[in-house]
Length: 215
Ligand code: T5A
Image (cartoon, rainbow, N blue to C red; front, side, top):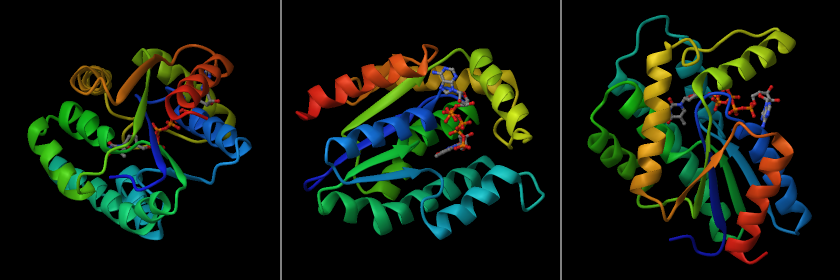
């Protein structure tokens, strides 16, 4: 499916360190002479960023049906694929994406309780068969992830978004859902212990990527 480029997604529960590791991986790839397109989901396009704001900050001020939430994530994803991801892969770039396909299954399927197989089917419609070449799943205990977010929010003076305000049970289901997906698709999803320090994680992720893709 991917013409020439490579597509790597980073997944995990809140505070697992995806954003940090996406940035470090992108830097390593750039230093190795690759063109890198670093993205986040939802977002990555003006339409996607508008959808992100609706989803994260409850801008509409009303409770969102889980199905509506699912479809908004997928609308952002379908648009991002057409506008950015496919063209990048076709010209041989490396796409590093902070969350993708699996987030919707973990959060809206396992977390919200939408039927998981249905979520996979509509997700499939949005991505048209495109899958990451590699998905790094940063697994972390829910409480440890939230401790990190509390530290970050305290220093940045920000609060929790709509998802971070969900209860512990929701986030435990998301984490368990991710681990289930890693068992379902072991050839694509690589689980790594996200509670280790950021430098050690960066080294391990780079070593796996360099080995798997012959860099
Ligand atoms: N969502 C998203 C869905 O429900 N369905 C979907 O389909 C999609 C695509 C996105 C939200 O949308 C939901 C999931 C999310 O709730 P977001 O703002 O993008 O929201 O939030 P997250 O993706 O959850 O990202 P966070 O920024 O909250 O956490 P990260 O990216 O996992 O962690 P990071 O790297 O920002 O680090 C958090 C803090 O920990 C420190 C960092 O310095 C930072 O302060 N840190 C570490 N500390 C110790 N050791 C390490 N190894 C560390 N790594 C980072």
